[in-house]
Length: 172
Image 1 (cartoon, rainbow, N blue to C red):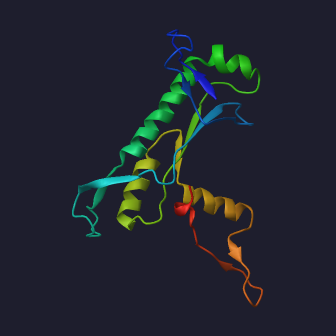
Image 2 (image 1 turned 45 degrees about the horizontal axis):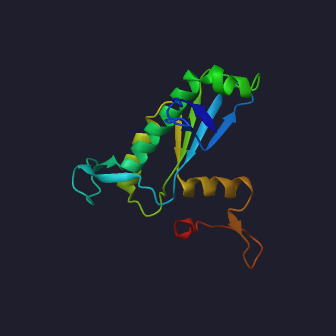
Image 3 (image 1 turned 120 degrees about the vertical axis):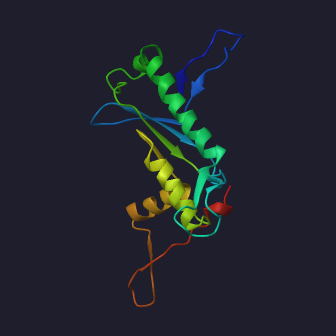
């Protein structure tokens, strides 16, 4: 969805901002921009403090540029959408959405394969974000499986057993 920001440069203009999806919230009528990266996108960067692999409480990691760049990109999308709301979104979505308390969603990377300390650093980072949700592909898949009752597989005695197999890392 085009959000705004194009400059009158050249035939097609330049500098416009778009998001992968734009959703309206039924209760608040506000909007959310959703940007989707790749499962292979990095989440955690190098060790910031402590010794890598030590498992000690001071073992913390910086975030990967894929993640921090994605967060800044989504924040920019929200800012541009709010700035250009009346001329771009407001006219196309009359009475369906407003610009009060917009949200952002970033779908990126995979948690599988990260050590517990790397997961902890990632969670510290994303839980500190305001009005922006970062969810990984494997978390999203797990939520969808639970929502649709696909998180259990049939066993010989008919009792379901929880599954945890995720092979989305191998998918394009």
